[in-house]
Image 1 (cartoon, rainbow over the protein chains, first blue to last red):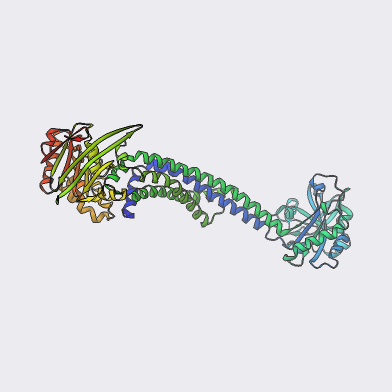
Image 2: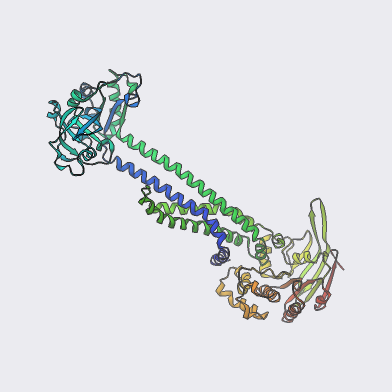
Length: 396
Length: 223
């Protein structure tokens, strides 16, 4: 039979079995929607990660103590990195551009009888530049602020908003109470959308060390910069070797920004892969549904197949009739799934569900559905075409 | 034997039912010539339907030889038999065996579509076949909208449309009332007059007497 005549035959048949066709397609519709959503969620989380880390300096290396009090207090002896350590790391280093130390501590801040606890970073003047921070108002901490141990503070955007409401243009010069001492606000950072930047207060390193660290002395950290991205690994090794002369290296954690981004993306990919396998399972279930219905259909239509064979319809034409029906159901189901997704995605996005789809996802969903249809449609179709005419005709 | 359409020599058909082997045909030889109207008469269980199915290439034989138009098709494969069914034999069943989803015209056109032709190219031939059986005004009706006699006429038109060497009818009046049955038999006689070779099987002597020649079959053997 001509291809077009086979298609016409299939269409007439599907038209007279609308409910059955729809029920069969349902599994594929759900499968296609699942694939589209999984891919969309995966893409959204990757985009989120890229967005989150877009300002991150890939040459940056973070050195801190593992298992310190941040992790619930262990028996490990607390390491306190000093400015001398930083100077030592920079000494004769081939791979390092700059090394700074910083302190982190929690501090209660009071303004106008309003008190809240925030993370406190004791940093040196280059910290803002190193991290690509931009100033919303005022200035960042200067070298003099640090050397003179001045009581000045730079607020993260959210911190400023918390104490001063939405309009805080003129807050530079205002005094707030930090750990019981009055500090003058000299600047506010531009919002970055990261709590570790926006919900923080920054004070000069030396000031912090002198006035603000508690009895346990806060956490110390070293921030180093490699001369080039390609030297990050060597730089990390060099840092560990040098620090190992004075400290127990097993307790020191050296991380670089690049590998942080990589691992975040990797874990997002793992999640996508996991969700993807769920989607594939849904499609397989849908495919088994197709196979089931087609097998029943072959049985129902045995007599019809017998008649077709008796009038001389060829094996391959009967195979085509059943295969094309399976393909129509699967691709049609996928198309409906795509249409439903196109409606659902914007609605769900409105509810804050992170789904970002590209055309590829729709094509992938259709392709997977097609494969499912072909794979699970083949067995029933083969069974139909292999029937002997006499057996099929006698079937009641 | 120049004008022999069917030449069957010592046909045996054995069915295996579990351990038991049943010979339905025990050595049947028949010859049917071009333009004949032959009736194969026998009671139920005589093997006449099996013989018909073998002639129509719907069933296979166990032993013997079968020549169709002087061509030995005894050992032909399924593809060859499919082609024979499509082009050289027009089969008419007791229960009509029309496809219920399609209208009369499409049912009649199907054997031609099977040959790889386009519907619009074959529709006139299908209409002609329906005209030959007197149903041109019913061609857009589906089988369930037609009477039994009309359905059988559609089936005859379907058998005719491919211009086969031979028309085979298996109890064509078995499911019809006597009036419709007579009409159908009359139609077969007409078709025979127009030159079609017809083999009809029946258990009914009243039907058989219309044929030019009667072959009686009983217990798998020619009587």
